[in-house]
Length: 234
Ligand code: PMT
Image (tube, rainbow, N blue to C red):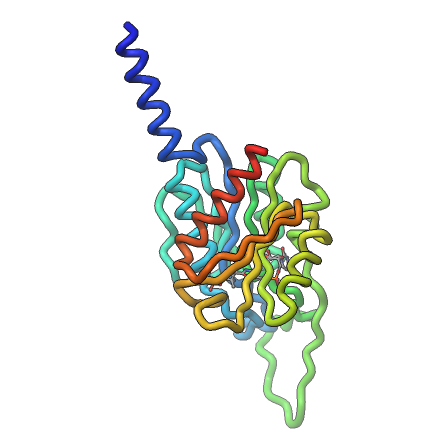
């Protein structure tokens, strides 16, 4: 019946409009990592997970199949999202690569430690008189390895900077073979760690830069996702 066909077509198009990411697999990382010194101490950073969780929530809202790999945070994960909890940068590396082949889009929002203590002390380090020195070594650069092993994925990285934001963001775009870098100056009020808002510039691999005004992390997430969708259509 033509009427039934029209009805189904209308339903199909309204669903596509509401769920533009249906059929796509999104892998999103969030939060900090913890690099253990001994059983009671670790090194970490100020990430609350809000930016990554907002991205996961919005992508799921728009119909994507979302896997959220999260460092330790105190947020409740969004519903309809598969959650994998990790602690260290090494755990995050393993979890991300386990999902990479089957992902269409990867967004590295997590504040992954660049360094970890070189030696893990199995027993609590006791206080000693005088100074103490902890040696650090580099962790693996997950985003860089994702870029080097890209097959079909769209790869989005973040850049958390305190100065020379554009220069460092464009540098990351090239060095990590990312398709997009979302840069935030974490020293600006209302941007970066812990806040409910963010102020970002999106740098695309084609050279385009889009400045977004201060918005809620949910709205920033929506803008990032529409930029990704636009890229997928190109
Ligand atoms: O969690 P919130 O409190 O909401 O704060 C949000 C945020 C500030 C954490 C977020 O907006 C942000 O900027 N995330 C990236 C933090 C970061 O580690 O930036 P970076 O410039 O050091 O790293 C660049 C990119 O490489 C990031 O995509 C990071 O995930 C990735 N990386 C970093 C180190 C490493 N060993 N492996 C990585 O993959």
